[in-house]
Amino acid sequence: MRYLVYLAVPIGLAALLLAASGIATLTRGWLLPRQRRHIVRPRLFGWAQLIMAASLGVQLLGLPAVDAAYRPAVNLPGTVVLLFSLVLVTRAQRPSPARHTG
Image 1 (tube, rainbow, N blue to C red):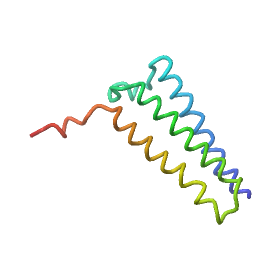
Image 2: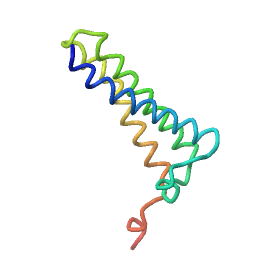
Image 3: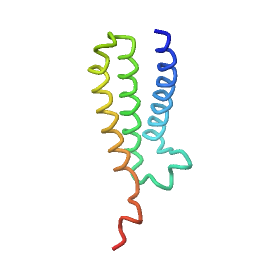
């Protein structure tokens, strides 16, 4: 059970930071300076960050809540939602200039 603390703290911290950044993006349109050049749909990006935070929260709750044998079945929906949020992040970004050469 001690290893759960080593997993839970970074996952929880990442979820909180993503949620805070997503809320800031949705309410103020604020993006990190490094992201401002690439993100063209900030609202979609903010929702993607909130969905990422929720999926990490589901995975975080699944760590101590179930037996180790059933943990993958609990964490799988969180992983699927995390992958969906990554699709939303790519949809919020500006297309690469290399993709439009032809």
